[in-house]
Length: 543
Ligand code: VG1
Ligand code: CO
Image 1: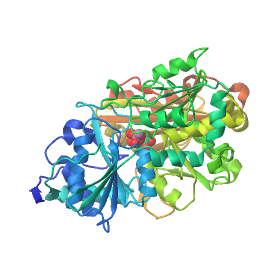
Image 2: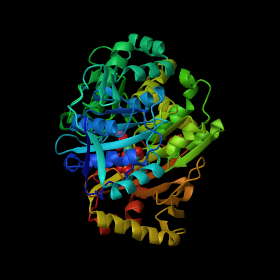
Image 3: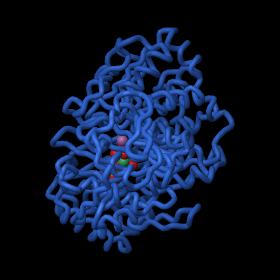
Image 4: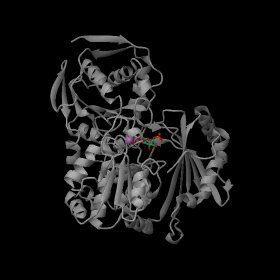
């Protein structure tokens, strides 16, 4: 065993994004790039020596190479033990579950989530802390700062570790245990949900289709939905995990999970459809010919939580990311519990969950979860919906429509302008920021602006402040337009425009949100002069 010290040139593009470091595979393959980042993590951590680290990822291209490098650096930095998912596989929520269950000091997730994979695709790495959740901003900023000044990393010289056989091994003085990626996670799901009730509903002929999008959740879904719950073989489609996700975007939305949406539109199609993303933390829920928006999904789960064993005692509070629709706010109000509004990104929910101020939380970007882990959890959301449908014996669409009857309907849409010139996107945001004070009182057709601000968040638990979290335009009647730039893209900038409006009167409900939000959508484009700055007259993706 030899301790090698390699002098590196610092990389200045390891700035933390919404969800860890995400770049093209080719960037990560540069000499010392990954090493630089991983060493920076250990350099800023304290008290980890001798402790346990969890390592796993979504199975994408470069995961296995990266894992070997990380294991060698971990061994050289005095990590006591690493728990590795077999084949370097662990969904993001499973990493969170394993960290918590085995009292690890942290974990490393290898994933670029829903971004495409393969040699020309994306790769990503994210550090999670002892609570199982993404490292808070204070830590990610320190890792970034360290990555700029670092001049060496420590690595042991050793042959590749066998990560495909369950059991214990050794790398220098560090223990390695290759674990079943599914067992701990599946056991947690069985504790939270009424598996018997779901199983009986399936036996009564209820048909589900789960689209794993050739991503990490295929094996989890086979084990839980088919083997444990008894859904017929074939209920899980695209269940084989592939390094390049079969060339697709493993992104569970109406565009990228089109074949699932089409199957659910068939008269004799399945009763329930669901899909999850590359690393298994996002979810899309469909009923027969019916799409549940993620913001509505969060609100409906909260309103019905006590029907599910894991939440039978009720919720302490709920939270949503700022751009997520206010549908959940109305549920919180009726339950008389707190509703927190956090910046985009799961890391901001961690403190609220740890302090037991909230039980459920979610984002408009197809992310929902609870205090059972500290990540969003795709399969958990699917099981929650299955449990609700089975317990009430009501179809998805009926549950949603009943919710709208009671709470009104919150129309919601997100317009993404992808691969926009970064400078142009920055200019647009600066210009709009400068306009904010002048906007209140201005009218667009029948809409009136009643307020405009830039969102900043003061964490009520640790007092930290996060600024520059999106520009908000508040319209008369509670409607809202939000602008922010994505922190997960790997090419140019992505401008996200979030638009919502609430309609209490169910006789006025329109089944096409784009039509219902027509005026707000037009105002959103004009207000920020999107076409002027970006040269785009239409978004690239509408959800
Ligand atoms: C996007 C979503 C955000 C989510 C993040 C990570 O970030 O908007 O809600 O938390 O992706 O999700 P951004 O900065 O591009 O808007 V995942 O499933 O990619 O880890
Ligand atoms: Co994801």
